[in-house]
Amino acid sequence: MANPLACPIITICVQIELEVSLDPTLGCGQAHRWRKNGNSWNGVIGGNVVRLTENAGGFETEGCSDKNVLLRYFRSGDDLPRIIREISDADPYVASLSSSCPGMRILKQEPWECLATYVLATNVNVKRIAKMVESVCDTFGRDLGERRAFPTPGQILDKREEVPVCRLGFREERFIRLAEDTEKGVIDLKAIGEMDYAGCTDRLMDIYGVGPKVADCVALFGFGHLEAFPVDARISNCLNEMYEVSGSYRTMAEFGRKKFGRYAGYAQEFLYHSSAITGR
Image 1: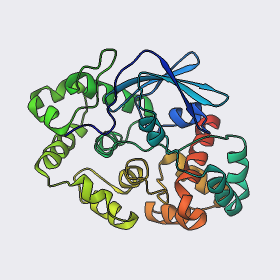
Image 2: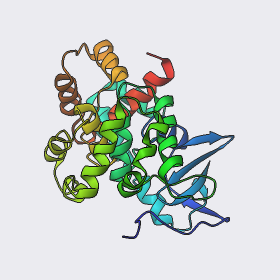
Image 3: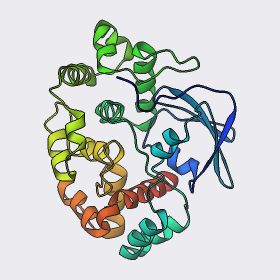
Image 4: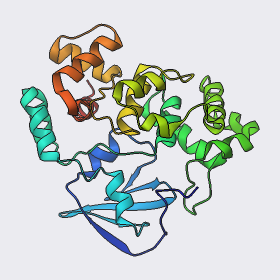
């Protein structure tokens, strides 16, 4: 089946007109294959090795000739002014964060890559996640020249004996099983993508190795459920300090969804970005 994100590799620059700030969007832990080099961001989107350089009108891209691939990835259909207005009306603190960080967007990642990445992203920091993901790509992914694509389930299973070289630790077993169940159709990502938020997260949590935080991350970044409000240690601390909310994961995630409504995921990203900068 053709990769919907695949497009020809080229060397000319293409201008993408879009309200976006690349630094917070690509650097706040949503996706884990982006590297900043000078004024540009280097990464892989599907089968494309791309370099993005922000400018006044949006950004220039080198490595992908199909603008629709990039517009989809950066969720160009999101009405940022409306989203910011709604979450700002819900809370003055988030209003201050959003006004100081214009153009941050939630990404629309490929569901398989997003799910597999977040299955690896348990009990580990962002730097370690990126290292594991890149090791998986280097070991199993298709050669794209400068980088390698994220592997399909079949590519992983074809060389499963090499999984230990990726140094995944306790995640190794769940990663192999995830590939097996996806390849066999036990995990039907297309069907999950047609579910509402509650159905999506419930089904994701049926998957071995997926808890509520991973389910919320995949629902938000992989399936586009903007009401999802993932809670990690940073967000937990923030909720406790700013809103005096503590308790179980469910309690904190429900607080975020109820407070910020249908765009809670955007509010979560502003909170996460702020806590990452301040180290709180």
